[in-house]
Image 1 (cartoon, rainbow, N blue to C red):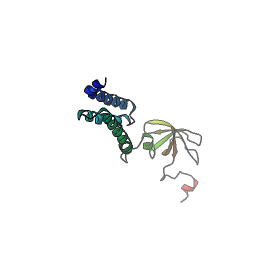
Image 2: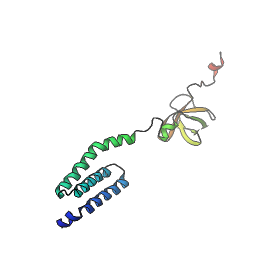
Image 3: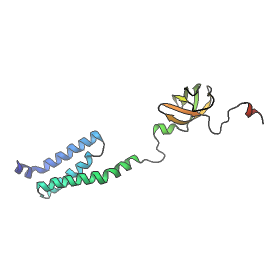
Image 4: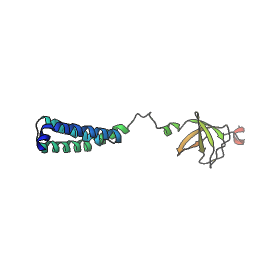
Length: 161
C-alpha cells in the first residue's frame, strides 16, 4: 500500500484538492479553499520527490498559514465595498415617500418609490394621507418617517407673518 502511495500520491493530493474545492463551493466560508492550497503545495512536494511525511507536513503548514494569514485579509476585502454601495435597507433612508394611510406612533402605510411599506413616526402629530414625507430609518420591515427637514407643516403659526 505504501508503495502505491509513493507511486500515485499525486492522485491522492489532486483528489484532496478537488474535494476541498468542492466543499468550498458548497460552504463559501474561505476555509476549504485555503486548505486546498495546502493540498496543491503537497502535490508540488510530491512532484519534487519529497517523502510522504514531508508532504503531509507541508500540507498542514501551508493550510494553517493560509488560513491564519490570508483568510482575515480576504474577508476584510470581501466585506469592504464602495462607499456608494448600500444595502437595500440603507438605500431607502433619505428617500421621499407619500402617506397612503395616516401614519401615527402605532403605524400606517406609505409608498416609497413603487413599494408600499408599513410606517410609523417616532414623535409628533399624525401624518395625514397624501403628505410628502422622508424615510429617516428602517426598523425591521417598518419605515420610520417624518416631514422633510425643509418642510414646515402649515398651521396657525405658519400663517402669521
